[in-house]
Length: 187
Image 1 (tube, one colour):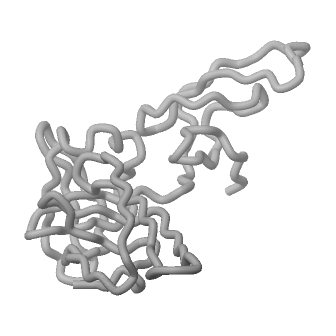
Image 2 (spheres, helix red, strand yellow):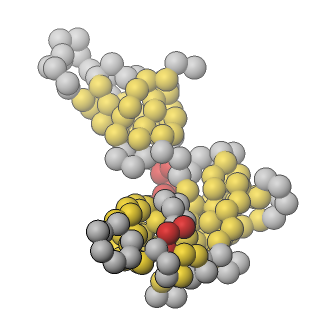
């Protein structure tokens, strides 16, 4: 149990029988009455959003989740396979549960796995990831409209719009939240 006043961004709370991650927390102390915490939470399992107003002295159940740094190994037809970097335990994550993350998983890279009741419920993708351009169309000199972009495909199959000067084989930094090009990476 955790008191409303002790909740911080990143806390895991148990609501409706499933874990929610606190994404925003704001305290409000009115002139009269008790102070409250306004909490915006996102379900780790299905992404639904829940907003609660909790008196700071009230206790709420916190979810006991474990976070492990694991290396992505490979994918088969049904599962993504990860190996825990400390214990070498193998974790299987059903592809159907994490289908939207498939373009951000790269062999040999480390990711944080959130485990609740022995089951992986989330794979945390870094905010920015470096990709290699696998397919890119060449542009003709003179196609220099200000801000012109073209679609490219990365080694994982992700399609991103990039400036015209980006070529096949180059490395680019991509914002994984917006799926947008950030900058070219010199290796």
